Length: 294
Image (tube, rainbow, N blue to C red; front, side, top):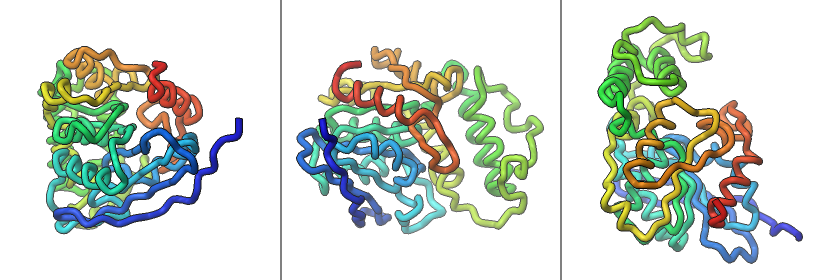
């Protein structure tokens, strides 16, 4: 069977309250399924190039969340909330025509859950990959305190030291220690991070999204009552990590056991941002889930 040809991405810009969004549409000739929306937060469209290429039979849409890469934000020093991101996604879906199918990862999965709650007709099937919902884990107090401590560290010392702690947090397996932020950490240069503080405090992750994302409490009743088929996804290589544990906890709340995907938190990536997972196997599993086979 000959695969449909995917054209080059068409880039669009959309003005929304407080921001201007950049989004890309990869049309597929003869596509009969709904558009497939791939996104993260604050990961931008550039993180989904490999995954998008595995769906030449679908019209694939990717976007840069407000404040990230090509998308601008009126006041970069302010926090962005899942509710704001959900409204942004709703407006993009209105432009491209919905409902859509969606694969959303990490903070994007949290924003997608907000989207389903706020606009239940927008998404047909949502695959929510490892949303880091810290309020759901058994060690919620330590997990929330760790993210708050990382944010304070960012405000006090800048990107390098805070990103080191963030990397250590998201890769930590098991309950978060009570003294997580205060514990000694490697130098930023060991992670290829800046050692000097440039004085800026508008980082899209550490400044704009970290707290609002990890502290978000989903509207369980609205998600359950929505017509959207919600599939939770965890990486085989993420077991014990905060995002994976939170996804299993969400599965217990929703009564929907997660589906295990190949790779870890970045299992869908094929070299984007220097990360390589298992994109071919990941895409195969995603296709099976979207087709209702898993």
